[in-house]
Length: 75
Image (tube, rainbow, N blue to C red):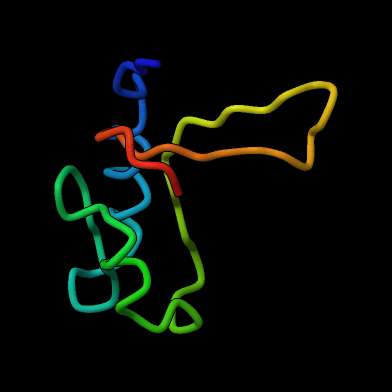
């Protein structure tokens, strides 16, 4: 299974990041956008979280879902 990069996620991330100073925010894109980065910070410190992922949902069993990073790792 192959997914293409999400078309407007960079623009969306830039718009959100422009709302706060670099000291107030954490911006992790490309290879820095990983599960270890997300789990390595206290997300309760932030008011806005944006995760750009691909998702897969089966209509017969919607409780069985998956999210993918750009690299294709299961999450």
